[in-house]
Image 1 (tube, helix red, strand yellow):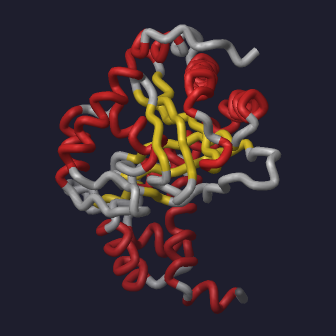
Image 2 (cartoon, rainbow, N blue to C red):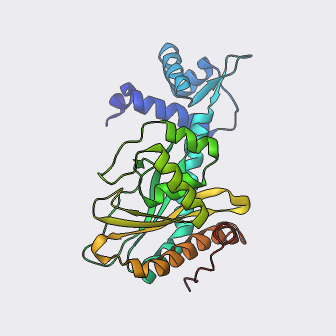
Length: 274
């Protein structure tokens, strides 16, 4: 995009404003100060700031009328930085889980603002036939093992807010009845892990466990996904143990000692990935 085109592009202008504010030490700016610094028309900038304020990306100080970065912008930055660092920390455990099970291992996170989950890292199975899940895409939290492991670990109020909302079916097997989901989530909390059959991907099986930091704080979820034809009920206890061990490993890498939280919540002496 050429210089003049970028000047007229509203997305480019918005990015310039946010980048300018983020890169400087000042806590707030007046419209004329920003306009002069950015070489923008003050009226145009004022309209742009109004649109950014409506999205929570900037805020206007009531006392001075000056503009500062908003909590919406700070939240997006924090989430992006946290996800990337969490993904890097979790990858060794995901690769160990993939090698121990032979199946694709995944790391997911839950966003309270979106009320949805996102997969942020994967160690793909080496099998020619495997389940491939898209990364960095919002998904409903009520479907599949990874979603239910997260949903079961939320506070009661957060859980009920999701159960009260639309529960769309992702596949024909997705559980969408709130009562049935509540009973399923009770089982997940009691056992410390979730298992699903064809609820997110038709013909797929998922096993997942929450990653719990100190004090039981929910960080994310670790799980595996596999085609139905490679799943054996007799092998489930071994796979569950390996998933729980991976969740403990990720929590322990984030906060030494935090991995004990998963074992304490489940009462399971799951095997080590080493």
